[in-house]
Image (tube, helix red, strand yellow):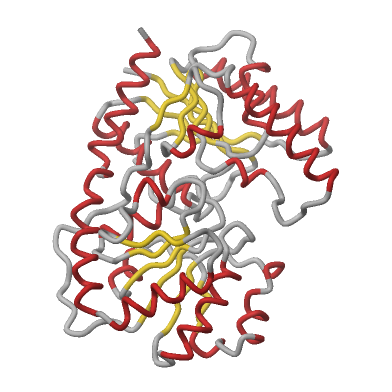
Length: 367
């Protein structure tokens, strides 16, 4: 039995990383008989998503000033490794601290880094001052160097390969969360467009609202439903009021059974400025929804075949984004045909295909 330790920030959040970890770890425990422990930080809450009962959870306290934080982080992880004695470690942390683990673990089993986001997530791309650019370049240099110290550095898309040095890289995409065997027949096309993801600059909801203004002018009876953790600093409610579209836009909290929202929508839109993968794309496609996404770095371009099972829009082009939404609304037959192709094409991300790649990678490193 392979003993696998996952190290992550937390499992109580509603993001894509947490969802993917719940699917992947549970599948390895249930179908491949892995002995799995998940180590998280300051995480005493219940998981947002469901995990296999075979999985064990531990949490370490890393509060305090930066020095105290680092020392607790280092000591806590070393203690867990000493107690659990894993055969392999997989780091799921898109922050900077996860990169230092090969340096702080003196003697260790093979260690993998799972990169769930584009590099731009670590940088404030809205700030283009000279010193911020210099800091970003230096940080990126350190990240690329640190990435080479892992036994394997796993990214989600072929586009992500461009962000890192060659050598220990491997591409393994995310697995599907669900794939309904049958879809309920919709007697008429729902006049609802869906977006899913936490509020942040990176997710591009400010761009989406600008596009939606143009859509709303032509189709005032259509609704935009946004599900995701809210962030008042993004001022999205204020922006929707300024654009005079607030009556057609609803900001919802995240829900664990997001598939209910997919079942009630006509299409999904992803306005992100960058993505590690785009988990919501494959979930929506499983429900037969055409997806419109910016061709951002780097996930959507690997998932969507432009014009066949969805549309890729020039990154940041709000007018073209709006026009594609309008085009699908005006042509319901084309919308449905694209949705059928999307549902068929997304089968390549079923867990039995993706988790098998992880099993083979782990066992290769253990030889």
